[in-house]
Image (cartoon, rainbow over all chains, first blue to last red; front, side, top):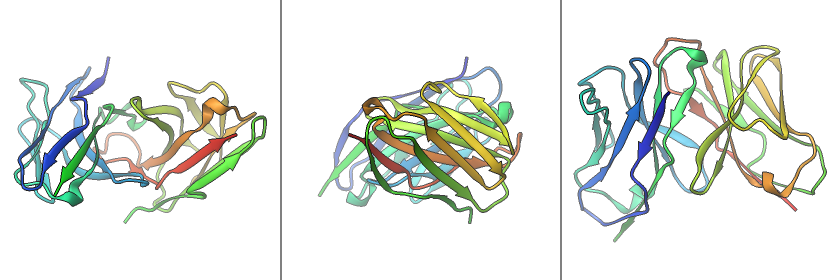
Length: 113
Length: 114
C-alpha cells in the first residue's frame, strides 16, 4: 500500500541549530512528495514539493531531496528560527485515485531562543 | 492564490445535535476532502468528493455524511454529534487527477462537542 512514516516528535532545538526531520515512504507507483507546515491554530500550508527522483524542493531556507533509492524525503534547514516552531507533515500522492494524499503523523518542532 | 474557506474557526455544540461544517473553494477544483486531525494520529480522511453529487468514503466515515450540491462547496455533516467527534476538522481541495499539484487547505474548524 501507500504510506508515509515520519520521525516522532517533539523535536526541540535552539535557535540557529541545524534541523533534520526524517520522512520515508512506501508507494505502489511513482509518487510526488510534499512537505506541509502547520502553525498553531491554522491549517496546513505547502512548504515544498518534489515530483520525481533526485528533485530538490526548497522554500524559506528549507530543503528536501527526493531519494528513490532510499524512499526518503528528509526535511532540512541550516539555521532554524523561533518562528519555525510548528508541526511539519510529509505527504505523498500518486496523481491518480482522485489525487488522494497520504500524510505522515506530523512532527512538532519547538525552537527556543 | 487558491483560497479554501471554512465557515467557522471554532464551534461548540451539544451531544445529539446535527452539525454542519461548510467549506468553499474559489479555484474550480474538482476534488475536495474532509479530514480530522487529532494529537498523535495525524490527518485522517473522512470523506472526499470528485464531482458535484459524487462522494467516496475515506478511512473513518462512521458518524459522518457529506454533501456537494455545487462544485465550490463541500459540507461535512455530523448526523448526531458525540463527544468523540471533538476534533480539528480540515477541508482541502485539489484540481483533477494527474496534476502533481498540492492539496490546498482551509484554516480548520475546531469543534467541541459537550
